Image (cartoon, rainbow, N blue to C red; front, side):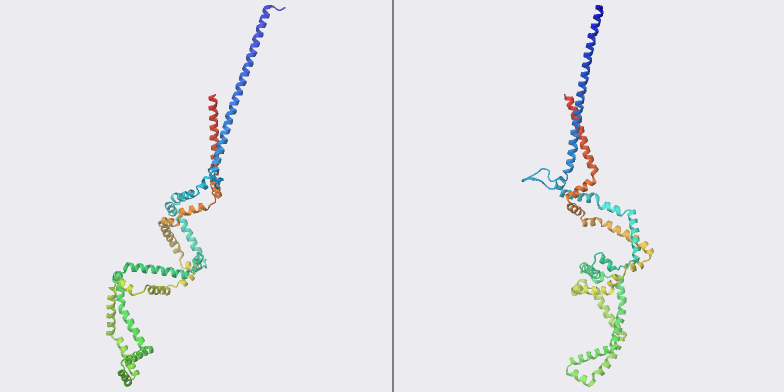
Length: 416
């Protein structure tokens, strides 16, 4: 039989053990509850992060698609659905205008193009290319006429004559307008005046020599006979009596040598020179408008045109092949002339570039090209160019949405 004190001790131990067991189970239950609560809170935060990420990504993706779609406005009855069509189809005209302005003002500016074509590297490459092309033309059998027809100039001979006559008519009209109140002497270069006056004696000799040659011929003798017949016929009966007594043939034989002797006489030449000199002095002090009033423009232009056609054999020039034309040029001259021509050409193009771009109407050209694109093609172009960037925008939307979801979850936890 156990000692009562031992029984008391054993009972105390039993009580302590039961209390410890109860306390231990309570701690376990408290920890498990806390863990379950934390897990729920984490799941809630992850859920909110997921929802936020989905909302952000889908919203950005939808916004990107709504730039282009729908392509046309959508209606419910007579009511147009908001945000239809997409932004770019709706603002297509403004987009074309802005693109045109951007290209002209910031991309294809005269300054940027001038800088490029005046660059030494570009100039050297262009010069070398021109030299190679010219040297290759040595073996070409294509005529200038064929070359012009290939580049779209039909009937080049007539075209050249037409352009030449038009150019001469323009210059003639400009000359009339500028010098109509000016004398010939004022517009005549001094050296040309001296040369003309030096040629006057030669003109006199030419006139007399041609006269002697003509009147010494049978044709000239016949002309003298006709003139004598006309002279005697005008005198009526007296002329008839003289013709009957003297005989027409004897008169011609007497007049012809005297006329030739008259033309050969020094005094005759001096007389003709004095007459021509006096007339030349009158002509020099005559105003151009007096000459213009007595001459028809059409006749002047026809004379100039016919003279030019006789002087310049356009048909013969057009028949020359490029090979023949280039073969006449020494290779050293090609190496010397081509850089000069290229440099001068580049300088002229550079100076006239602003005017050229203005004539080309680049802004309108870009606008028309953009307007001609279908909306589907514009969408494909934009997406092909910025595909990776648009994806990053979508991912960024998901990231921002997830971050906002996380912040919202933390705020909810703090407010509990």
